Image (cartoon, rainbow, N blue to C red; front, side):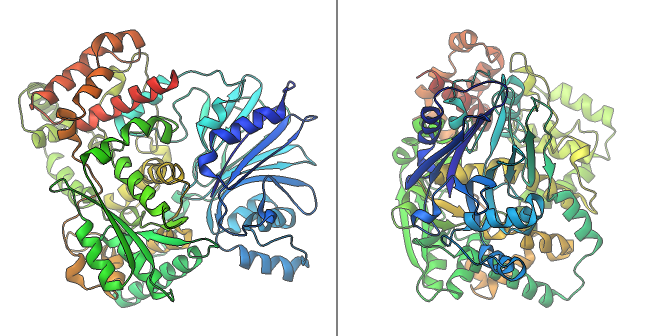
Length: 629
C-alpha cells in the first residue's frame, strides 16, 4: 500500500520539478512512510511522486517510481496484485521473461504491460490498486483504478496542467491548483454523507470511477480524455443473472467457500506482520475463520469496544476469537477517546466525509497498526449477499405505499410535513411522494431530501442511484438495490472510510470478499440463496456455520455506530454550535442559515433526531475551517 501524486504540464513549462514532486509526496507520507521517490521528464512536462509502505519485497528493488525492463514505461503504483506470482509464471512460459530485479508485484505489472498491453493486463489482475503509467515512447499517461474501487484516484485539470494523485492533498500542493468548492458536490455530501464518484469537493477535479482507466495524450485538454471501463459491474450483474448457479444449496455453499478460501489465501501473502479486524458479525468472522483454517499459527485479530451502553459488540468478537483460537486484542474506548479523533477528521479525509462510523474505524486501525502492517476486513458481504436491512423491508414497504394514489401521498406529506410526528413516521413521509421504486430507495437512503435548497448556488447532479443510465437490468428490486449500493455506497462510502482511516495510520487493509471472482460468483447465486426467510447472507452464513456455531453468530445486526445524537446534545454541543453559528454561516456563504439553524434547534430541543443531517454539515464546516488554518 502506498500513495502517489503527479502532474503533466502539457502546454507549458513547469519550474522546479523536484521540489514540487517532493511536496506532493510529503503531503501523503502517511500512506507510505517507508520510502519515497520521484521522477520527471522536463522535456514532456510529466512528473511522478511516490511514497511507499513496504509490504511485498521490502528491498530497494521495490522502489518507485519504477521503470520497466524495456525502459518504455514508468509507473507509480498503489495497491497489491495478489496473483502476480502466477502472472510472472505466464510471462516466463509465454514470453521467455527470466530476468527479474526483485519479487515485487509492481515489477510484474510493468512486464505485463510491456508484453500484453494495458487493458489486457488490467483484466488479468486480481487485486486492489490505483496507478499512473507513463508511456515514454507514445507520450501517453494512463490512470487506472481497481474493479471495486478499494484504492482512490483523483484527477483533473487546473488551467493547462493535469494533476492526479491518491488524495486531494497531493494535488493541492501543486502551484497550478486554483479551483474552488463544487457547491453541487456539497449538496451530494448532505444527501449521502459522502461525495460519490466521479465528483469531488472541488470543481474540475474528479474521482476516477472503480473499474475504469483513462488515457491522456499530448494535446488533450479538459474534457477530452474520457474514462473507459475495463470491468463493468453492470455487465457482470446482467451476465451472471442470465447464467445463474443451478446447483443445490450444499453445492452453492461449498463453491462459495472455495472461492473465499482462495481469495483469503491470496490476500494473506505479505512480508510483514498481518492480521484481521473482527467484529463478531458474519462477514469478518467468515474471513477470520478461513484465515485461521489456512494458518499454522493463531491469526492476530482486533476488535474495538465502547463503554457506551447499546454500542458495544466487542464481547461477540471475543467469543468468536476464543472459538477460533486467534491471538485476539480488544480495546475498550470511552467517549473522550472517540471525541479526541474529531479534530483530526479534516486531515484524515482529504475531502469532507460524513459517515460517523469513521471514528471507530480510525480507532481500530490505530490499534491494529501497533502489531501489524496489513489487516484483512469483512467489507462487501452486505452488498453482495443481501445483508442490509433495507433489502428485506424496502420491497414490502414500497408494495404497501404504492397502493395509495400518488396525489394522495403527496397531499399527506404537504399536510404533515411540519407536524410534530415521531421520527419513524417522519422517515415514512420522506419516501411517500416517490413515483417509482428506484426513487423510493433514493429517498430512503438520502439524509437530506432536497439539499440543493440549503446550499447556496447548488444544482442537482446525476449519480449512480438516481440516473437510470447507470442501472443494470436486474430480476428483482432486491438485486437492483444491491447493485447500486455496490457501485455507490460501498465504493464511495465504505471503502473510502476504511482506506483513509487505515492509511492515516500507515496500515494496509485488504478485502477478500471483493475479489472479483467472489463478486461474480455472488451474482450468479439466485435470490433464495442470499435472502431466505427474511434474513440476508444465507449462503455466507452457511459457510461460516461450518466453522463457528450458529448460535454464536445469529443475532440482530447493529452496525459500527456511535451515539452521535447524544454527543451533539452533550459533549459536542459547543463545538457544533461554533461551526453552525448563524453569522458564520452567512459570512462563509455556502449555506442558507435558516434551514441549518432549524435542524440544530429541533435536535437540541429533542423534537427530532437530526444527527445524521447535521453531521454532514459539520464535517464540511470542519473541513472548510481546516483549509484556512
